[in-house]
Amino acid sequence: MKLLSNIDSVIARTLKTSILFDSFWERWLVHGIEQNDLDRIRNSFTSIENWTEGWLSVAKRIESSAVQMKEQQLWREAEYMYRVASLCYNLIHWIHPDRNSEKMNWYKECIRAFQYADSVSPIETRYVHFEVENHACSGRIRVPSHPVGCIIIVNPIDSTKEELFKYEMDFNCNGFVTVSFDGPGQGETYTLNGLRGTKNRWEYFMDRLIAFAASEFSDLPIHLFGTSLGASWAIYGSCHPQITKTAAVSPAVEFERLHLPAYFLERMDLSCTLVPEKRAMPDFKSLQYRSPVLVFHGKKDQMVLSPDMYRLYERLPAGKRLVEYDEEGHCCNNRLDEIRQRALRWFKLK
Image 1 (tube, rainbow, N blue to C red):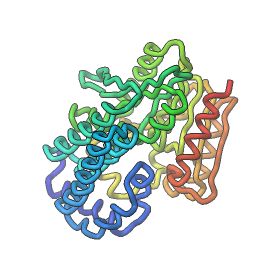
Image 2: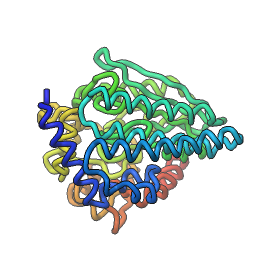
Image 3: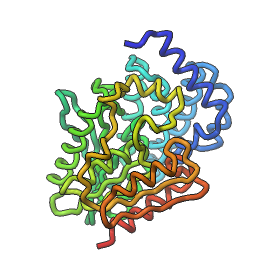
Image 4: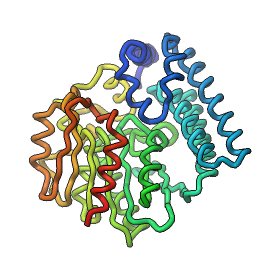
């Protein structure tokens, strides 16, 4: 167990990084946080209390707007605002790296606001789970009318199924069922159910997840879409015989060659083991590659360098494609809208 002083140090490093580096916020801005809201409260992030107060004020204001839109029967607007409010609660939960009561309570608020969004959405939502080592892995399925395929979204390792709601929206609007679970060390599965991430657990989780989606939607092609470490596990999943195609954005390669910020490693050590032989990373060299993979890479990625990406790409099977962006870094954050549309067009190709 981590000492409290170490936890406090991790939080302090994270807060300092959030104030000093604009790149810290790219992830949250592209996922729905408004720049004006961030600019108004960012300089106050000198303590966890200020972080909580700042994002709570934003969440309450946005959720109040969602209620008003719901009363006016502006369903789409209400749904979107509830999801952004949920993202603010997600940020409050995320700042806590350990599974304390504060983290759990704020994550429950995140889920609550997200389910309000589901309740006003025209798209059917199912809440589902399966077990890994007697721990529930929690997920959600979104089913549009007349679906043309199914996309399993594999989240980045330090993320939640609620964070990537824009991915769900884009895929659903194009007729795809979305299946999104919190894996070992992620979101509900970690924060509420206590399952940390390891290599073996992630292998079992991915195999179960694909089999689950294929059994639920046996008449549809099953695809994978993943980002960062989620993209690494999506590539692992591309070896499964029930996967048709995979899109992988900035897949992480061998762990020893990753350039990870110190604060991120310290956070990750709480939710996922960093013991070398047990780390939650696929063994790319031993995989039996099967189905086509579409890879997206930013040439300014400082976490996954281009030579490492090219070596991984060379291992992939026939039908692969590589799309590169000269000005993008890790996760190609500024091109994610375009990336999702390109992936959708590729999934639809026969």
